[in-house]
Image 1 (spheres, one colour):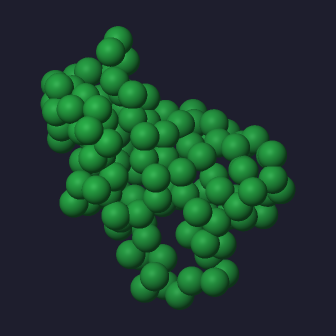
Image 2 (cartoon, rainbow, N blue to C red):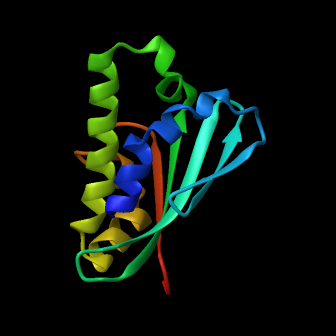
Length: 123
């Protein structure tokens, strides 16, 4: 899971607002696509019981355009992204499946920014 966290706190992703719409980029083994002000990043993670999960996290352009944020706001955004990523690694696969089935994943405490989708492989 640390790779996903590192991806969103790295300088590389902070600078993706320089990319044009439709541009693909690769960073730390993850491939992203800039879609009209959004950046979608997809990668693999594991739940607490070691079930592989495909994680897709979509961030709005306002997060990526660091020129419009002061340091305090940037720190807060990075904290929320880390919370989102870390929460997946603390769930069991069965719990994650239930949250996905109920549509409740994004309303959980800790999933406070962006849109997060996760697919438990083999389900």
